[in-house]
Image (cartoon, rainbow, N blue to C red; front, side):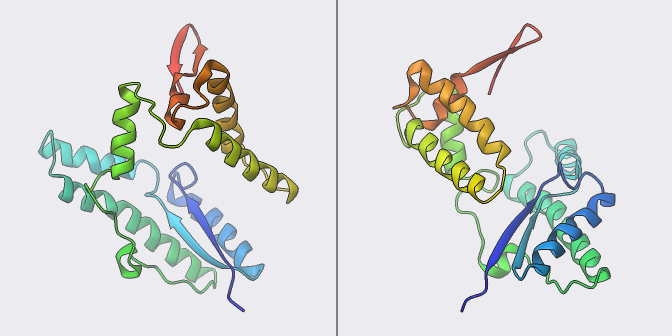
Length: 195
């Protein structure tokens, strides 16, 4: 029988400072205690990425992309190492891995995946030629939300996306690409913001 694995993502909104590390350790240990192997994916702590990027831009207004990617990755590596130390202190056996050690690499430009680069460009041009129609994305997200609900779980981000996606479909974008959801606007304090 194969071991069950859960992947946990700890972003900078969770790891705002090093004082938040015990919360991450607790969450990891909670899943280990339930019998699962845990893969924890971590972002840099707090504004570390912003500070590193500011350092690079202080040297050059357009820093070399490969060097910049390596610099920014040091924030994630530091965060992973600190979580490893904190897990060890809590008695949880863990191994800190560099993504390259397990074959996780990004193809294409170092600072953006081809999908994100192309999709972002298309969104800015309001080019919503279907790559993945919005109605299909909404159907898949609804199935995921229903399955989570049936297991007593909440998916707040999925719920928020579904709200926007249903609004975009009501505006006639169901057959357009999922990126067409950017057309749904919200008015806050008299300002229009695209979501």
